[in-house]
Structures are given as C-alpha cells and as structure tokens.
Amino acid sequence: MQLSVNTLAQLPQAAKAILDHSAENKIFLFYGDMGAGKTTLIKALCEELGIDEPATSPTFSIVNEYIGRDSRIFHFDFYRLKTQTEALDMGYEEYFYSGAYCFIEWPEKIPDLLPDHYTTVNIKVADDNSRLISIQNF
Ligand SMILES: Nc1ncnc2c1ncn2[C@@H]1O[C@H](COP(=O)(O)OP(=O)(O)OP(=O)(O)O)[C@@H](O)[C@H]1O
Ligand SMILES: [Mg+2]
Image 1 (cartoon, helix red, strand yellow):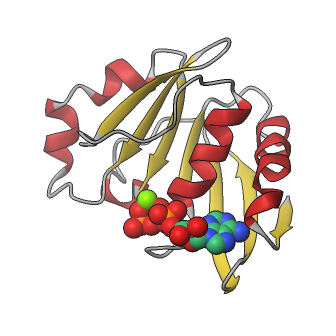
Image 2: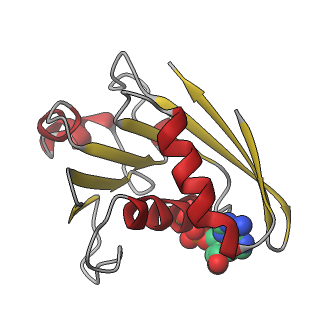
C-alpha cells in the first residue's frame, strides 16, 4: 500500500490506514533517511492507539514504553547501536515477543534479529511537508 501525506495534519488518517493495513502484525520497521519523519509518524500511530501522554521522553535511550488503550507500545531507536550484541544485551526479545506493538527506527542495525513477521514502513521525502509512505506486510 502507498500513501501520500501532504501535510502534518494528514498524519492521523495515515496512521489509521497503516494500522488497518498491517492486520495482525504488531512489529513495524521504519525505513527512511534522517529527518524523513519516522519519529513523527510513530507519534501519530501512538496517538491512534490511544496513549495518554506525549510520545517523547527526556530520557530517551534505545527503547521507550507507552501505554495504549488496548496494548502496550515499545518504541525503539537503534540508530546509536554499535553491534547487534547490544540489542541482545538489552533483552530485545522480551519486547519483540511480548505481543505488544513494537515501532522500530533504524532496523538496519539489527538485520539478524528481525522476527518472521513484520510490517515495513518506508518514508520518502517528497518536499518540505510531503511524504510518500509505502507499507508492506511480511
Ligand atoms: N508529512 C510529514 N510527515 C512526517 N514528518 C514531517 C512531515 N512534514 C514535515 N515533517 C517534519 O519532518 C521532520 C521529521 O523528523 P523526525 O524526527 O520525525 O525524523 P526521523 O525520520 O525520526 O529522523 P531520525 O532518523 O533522525 O530519527 C519533523 O520536523 C516533522 O515535523
Ligand atoms: Mg527518529
């Protein structure tokens, strides 16, 4: 599925469409350059899932947890990961196989640790406020 988002105001409906399209999948891999809008889209997804606090934390490290309406949500940013061993050490499996939503930025850093099923979200910058978003289930 492809979505074209032309303003930030369209992100809530894009988030809803992504969640509908992903069906049973709870693990989402976000691809896109720095500043493409991965974190911004994840915030919209968290809001769609009914979190009651803003999806940012001053102590943001590798993983943040939010409480959604019906499910917990883990938000990972693996950008600073140096080796996949660091993900093993932080106990990534506990999160990935918990049944909670997992939104993962920079999955390129953990190529050998991806689960069997996931949804990929590719974000391409079209211009200042426009993004082309491709979603695929695996
Ligand atoms: N349609 C849009 N969708 C997402 N972000 C947008 C859009 N239009 C403008 N932006 C802006 O683009 C920026 C995206 O930054 P964001 O931190 O989400 O990127 P990122 O992909 O998470 O980068 P990083 O790889 O550094 O984590 C924000 O300033 C956001 O407001
Ligand atoms: Mg980000």
